[in-house]
Image (cartoon, rainbow over all chains, first blue to last red):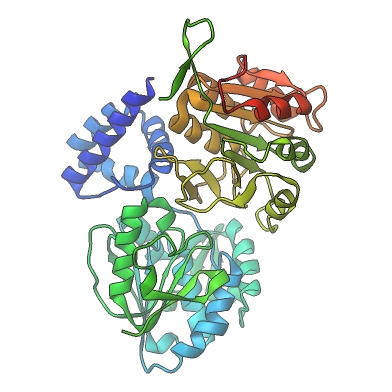
Length: 274
Length: 204
């Protein structure tokens, strides 16, 4: 297959996805999206991206499966324990001074990061005064996040991460094992609002004290990254916090001046006073 | 595409604009024979994937920064690829080259049990650079890099593999040579001088 032809097909497929279903992947980092699309094409049984495009345009039932290929990100609870330790030890003392809190887990995928935050806030006695917003563009991923069920074989990694993050309880307090699955306690969702939201096309919806958006921006090109960071800037309360993935930063962003590094090594930033 | 006419004036030979290297078991010793041999005015970027355990601090950058004559850094997401610089993939992230020749990092699933994966780098770099790319598969104990090296050759780029007979761990270069018959097998010192000479017209 001529590479140029493939690039044209991908461009057209992403355009079709946007025009027909309003999912905008046109400014996703192209090299990653191409790998994912190749996988989708092969595993969904299409001979070419053009054929996949036709199938998608004429049959909306194919959309969820394609979205899974394009968006689902398998993470771990307390992935990068030092990040959670920094939130716990450096950010939470500031958050304690507020009578009520809003925390946004942006691009929550299947919920691993969300549950990590809720458990940490429960351990720190802040859960009851906090409202958590968990958003993603993929409705199936949001459903999975709202179920909170993970394969049991992933739990040992979660448990070890939790311990290294400075966890004050045992992770096993929060789930029960059930036929090879770990079912997380539904009380962890008492303070959570799940919502379909796109960092690329949707707007600010509440004023936040902390936004955690980890390993989402790396999938965007600079233009989308700036759009998302502008959204975070507009959503954060005065002196609110923004946490990014360990290989993400604000330093290429046009919004960089609106933030100051708060825990530099952990990519935790604080919104300047306005 | 930048192309220069061959001496005989027949077909144009693409000038190589970037080098990608993949290595696994025995990587540090093998790279130590290659990267420090590149001259201070080396005109190409060199992107390197080494299989490193995810939970281990990546010591490759400080190690090679101290021994190389060109800049050595850990790749950052969305940074522009610059000549005369060695970029190591951060541990536990795939490193990809975008069509506009910037770097993307990703947490997509492991490929050949590896993240970073050599195939992921080589595939994306072959897309971005086409025939202007040189790919090198060094020592290692699995078969990551084989499909990637073939992608480099299929796009018209130069494909090299370390000679399995002298490699610390022969499986990976052997798999690459099997998958990519166009690839040339060379000793580490041959690879070092081949790469050092790249950047002008391609040596034949």
